[in-house]
Length: 205
Image (cartoon, rainbow, N blue to C red; front, side):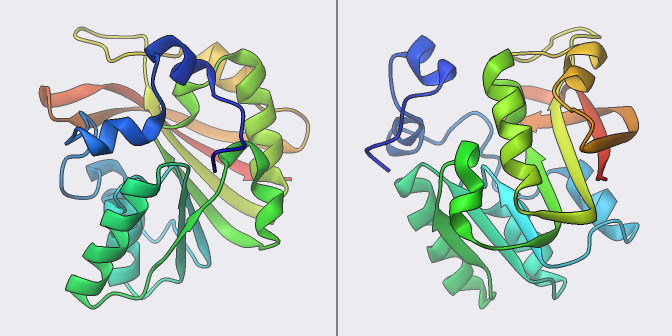
C-alpha cells in the first residue's frame, strides 16, 4: 500500500494510518464490535457477503463472522490487518482481511450485499468523501445496503471530524438513496458513553 496517495487525515496528522496501530492502541480500537453495528446485525439488517471498509483490527468484521456471515475487512494499515488475522485465528473465525485502499475498492474485483463503515467516511475531506462513495458503489450490489457510523456535529463532547446531516447526505449522488440517518454513539477509548454519532442507512440504487 506504499504507492497510494496520503489522505487528508494523514496529511493533517503528519503520519500514516499504520502508525496508529504501531504505537497503539488507537483511540477507536475498543477491543470489541461497535454497539451500533451489533444492534443492526441483531435486527437482521446485515446480509452477506459483507465488506467492512476501514476494518482496523477487525472487531466489527469478526463479530459478523461469528454470526456465520461471509465478511471481508479491508484497510490500508498492514499492522492492523495482521492483528485482525491473529484474532480470527485465535477465535477460530473465518474472516478475510485484505490490504486495500477504500478510495479504490473496485480493484478488489468483488461484489458485496452489505458494506459497513465504522468511523472511516468522516476522516475524509469533501472531495475524498465523493470519491469514497463512488468507490463503494463499485463493489456494492444494486439494492445493497451501506451502513455508515460517523461522528456527529450535534451534542456535547463530539469526536474529531464531525459531520452534519447535510454534509453526510451531500456525499451521496444519484446512485444512492439515503433511507435513514439516526442519532447513535461511537464508542472510543476516551468517551465513557461514546461520542455523538450518526448511523446512516443508505441503499445502492
